[in-house]
Length: 221
Image 1: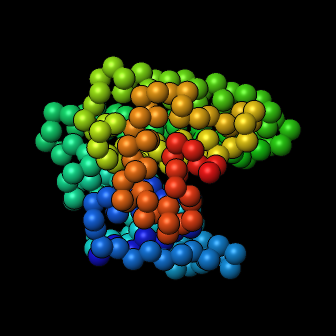
Image 2: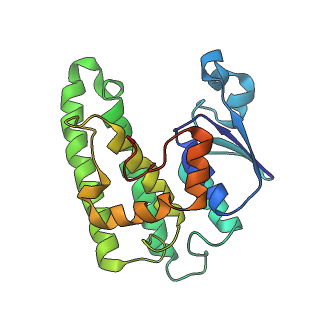
């Protein structure tokens, strides 16, 4: 049994989607951020930085999105290549490409003042926008060229859900903002997102967190 500590429409959504897709029993515990729960000793014992997500497992608490996803994929087959699969190397490199490039750059686009102070926020946004365009283009080209089974537009995958939530947040930004990117600009990725948002797991997560019916391809509706 897993316990996911979550806040709506945060990185915990990625973990919720994967748990749902794998049909794993789990408890979802809402974090009372306004009451300072992220700074509480109990939460800091699970995540030393007081960030989201954190998940209690039979092997102890887990944090860091990519680590939780990899943990789940190794214990519950179906959404990623097994450790002995010949596809494992390609999956791993693009999983960590996402976790070490796409997600941190997204945070720079959302919180540019945290990187170099308010006086340099505009420069951070400009640079982060260029890098995000590059990262998403590389992913889109890879999917179109290689059509990997572990990032498919015909079935759910762990990496697909990870990217779908990140693209959801980018598309939710106002048009014209440096942080605004739509999946429609990346056709191969867009097809992945369209497949995922029709899955029962995505529909259930959208209902649980009040996110609307088209949570990936058109999150504004």
